[in-house]
Amino acid sequence: MNITVIGGTGNTGAAVVAEAARRGHTVTSASRSGRHAEGAAKDATADLTDTAAIVDLINAADATVIAVSPDRTGGPVQPTVDAFKALIAARPTGRLVIVGGAGSLLAADGKRLLDSPDFPAEIRPEALAFSEVLEAFRAAGDALAWTLVSPAPAYPSEQSTGAYVVGKDSPVGANLSPADLAIALVDEIERDAHRGERFAVASA
Image (cartoon, rainbow, N blue to C red; front, side, top):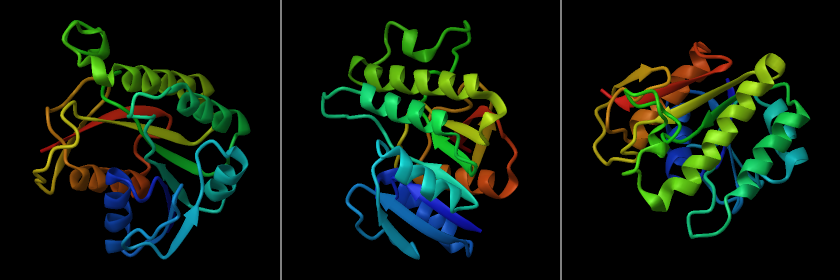
């Protein structure tokens, strides 16, 4: 398959590029820097806010992983939310697998993790942003071929088990490594098992 990874030089994206290439897929890594990602057959320069360029990349691939996070240096997160909403409005025809956050997962009481009083304040803006992104994709319904993956709360952890477990809208474990998430993401690309929904992943 031809797979594009937007954010292919980041921690998560680089792991996905490597895993997909290891399985024999042809991978394009797209990032703001355009620098090479190990395993990529092609490297492209692209920013999530450039909707037309992102749509072209998506429509040229069999499946696209978007592993892009909001600003983590204290800057605004709204540009990332706006970029996802613009992408949804553009209605790309290719399959999308989006790496979201854990904050929108539901605790045992049915409330979002990000609404817990002990949720880390420093990552709350990012969690709120990805929660809004999830709802935007849900609202789009089957107008797009999308899947959103929420990693375990303690992501990224260093220890890879080489295996993973999945759930739906609640955490299925505390830890997840980039390598294990990459396995889950490439499995989803190959199997198309969660189209039009969010699922949770943790290391087994």
